[in-house]
Image (cartoon, rainbow, N blue to C red; front, side, top):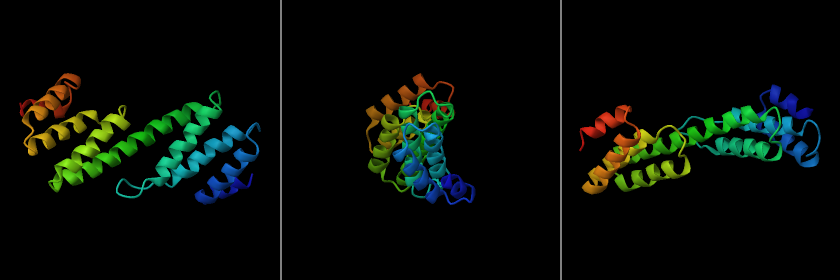
Length: 172
């Protein structure tokens, strides 16, 4: 498969295009699930650091989710699920990175928007504790004491072992 040659030569964008064409033309071929998985890996290889554009991250997620939808019993499905989780966590960290930038620059409303998005779009990201902490801090900075206390209380209740919960206790 020419896509495999492109992939092995680290021409990931070309490889992704070839894999896409193969799956589109041969969706029931025995190697279609493999091609869909490799399409996702091609995008995954192009993922950049958090401070850069995350288009490749989103494309990889879509490719792996397409694999899971079209070929749920494929031997590639377990690894695709792991990669989707990893990549969604990465997008959550990207949102947090931007929210922290806003917070540091005293744009608390901008930070709140990004932080709330993390909780709604990436509820399983594993960063809910620090997200709640910065939501509380943003509310505090905006003079919304009741909302800050409510947020800190939720953090303490839901993540009692978190170092952010310890910091939140000091804010109440």
